[in-house]
Length: 127
Image 1 (cartoon, rainbow, N blue to C red):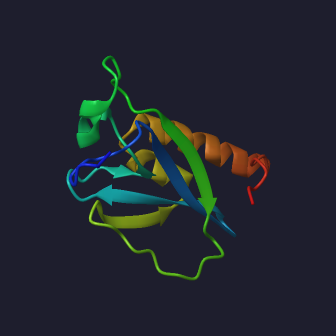
Image 2: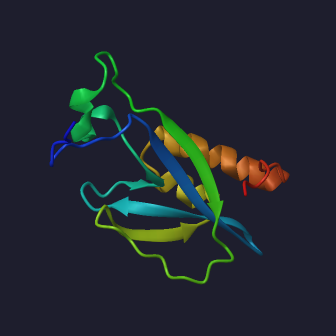
Image 3: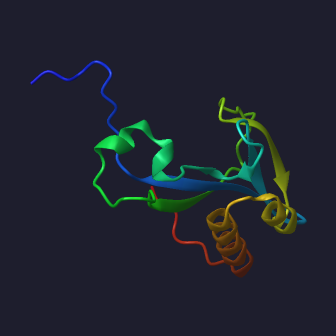
């Protein structure tokens, strides 16, 4: 069977990745400004209508399930490189990051990450 040259194959899943670093003053979180609408967010995916591949997804499927991850990048020495999706980013403490975020699920994930960091209750590192 031959695949179409322009076929888009994408599973109906998305992720939200919250980058953080631990500082003397407390955790800081990276928030990113979307280039298309100026909203601030973590690194993530969005609702079904934003994906061309959604035409092949099941009927009655409206929201792309989002899986949440956090990554400690405090030891990283590389500079942050933005894709065309974002035109700016900043490192901020919890309160400022929370207020900047546009999407409720980003805010909820940030709240949980901050609570876990402050309680020393992060899940075991993979790998």
